Image 1 (spheres, rainbow, N blue to C red):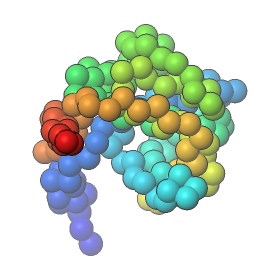
Image 2 (image 1 turned 30 degrees about the horizontal axis):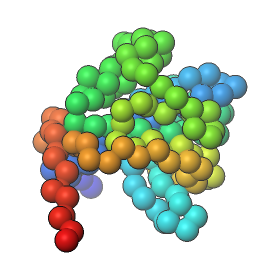
Image 3 (image 1 turned 180 degrees about the vertical axis):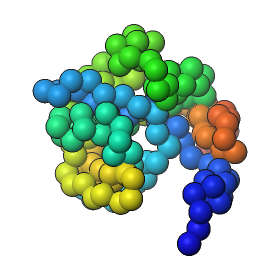
Image 4 (image 1 turned 180 degrees about the horizontal axis):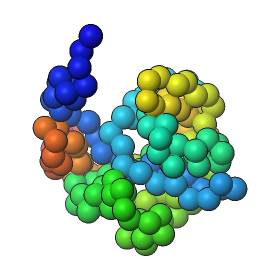
Length: 167
């Protein structure tokens, strides 16, 4: 059996995009920083998001049935930290940025690289986490921005590839 520390050390070498996952609805607001987001299929457009079952965000997302994956830009490190805070209230988290709504009502972060507004279609419990399978209902893209990844237990900015010049 692999111990938790060994596993976590190995995973620190797996760079991942940083996103803030939000939800809104009858159960209220939810928002947390995650790096466990993955494309599942493009027909229908579906992604998965993993959230700890002990998190209050998990219960709110379940009850609301929606979420928005807000892929953070390189200059949004402070937003990632705010939504990762164990002490910040939900109100103060959302007050730290500007938001809009796309289709489901889940908050979409203005200035993010992408906002993927989703309806939760299915869930699986795996260990300490819930895997939410989500069909994308609306997308807002903001191309050409620096990205934010989490690697080696720290945030790093990534420049986009240079745009090809076409004659």
